[in-house]
Image (cartoon, rainbow, N blue to C red):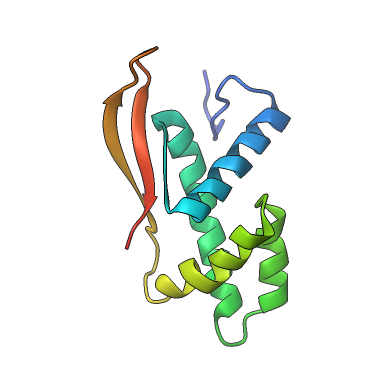
Length: 123
């Protein structure tokens, strides 16, 4: 039984899983949308939403901007994407209380039948 065991394993070791999440979130903020499997999208979605919230709090009056930047940059692979998070994405969601991402189902993948989805940042 998996009672009280939160999170997704995705058949990977913890380091591999952490790298996968980091790559997926970085690409999501770079392109605004990514095509991936449903399981990966469900695992990455809360990470992306928390990063946007962190960036919003850093931009808010009285928020610690440098600390928020360092925390978000530590979870992203590219400094340019971290900059884009603060300059493009966080101001866009300034008045939105949450729910920054959406998952759109695309159907099964041809090779193995895995359920594919489009994970995108809402407008």
